[in-house]
Image (tube, rainbow, N blue to C red; front, side):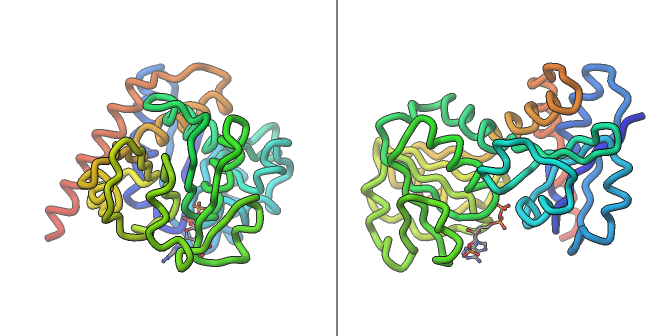
Length: 260
Ligand code: ATR
């Protein structure tokens, strides 16, 4: 049986295990996918080397690079990875966040000729920036910490953004927080957030103010589908992945209700 996992600081509520497990089951593949929450991954590198592959999430997408044996060329430019494949004992890094997000944008709107505000400057933001840049040159990155946005051609800090978020056609939140309050008319705009759990105040405010608000479920499925393709060289059953993610979400809700 092949073994896969998701590495992150707190992945206990991640939908990736249920999503990938559902796909393995649908395609009759004997494989397991487990969430691995650790505060520091360095000590468990020998364990990670025994896996056939793994995904990487917050906050290790950038720092894991130096512990891998190889990364594909695009990841060198991006500076972040989210998918690792064990190829004959070598850990090779890939990034499927950018293509996964691009596909989810293309499901709802045309990215070209739009003013984009990309919020955040972590590994996911860098991958998305790189993917969108191929089709759109008008991308401003907004972040809390100035030194982290230097990869972008155009950038702004929250303190300078104020109400000028209304000037953008597409807002994309890649941070784990609600980055600022949306309180002005956003009719005709698109607001994406790569988070996929409920209680998303940012998207609620966007929707209340007339924007089309899109959460991270579709990106989750798309980036996961590309990760599966890297591991197996096969097309996944995306419907099964979606159903697996939905079942995983219901389980998270059930667990949180029973904890109360
Ligand atoms: P990744 O995309 O690699 O998973 P992350 O750790 O989830 O990264 O998120 C990193 C981004 O979220 C950064 O833009 C970070 O801002 P800084 O560069 O200023 O650190 C942002 N972020 C995380 N927590 C934040 C907070 N409490 N307030 C504002 N921004 C935050």
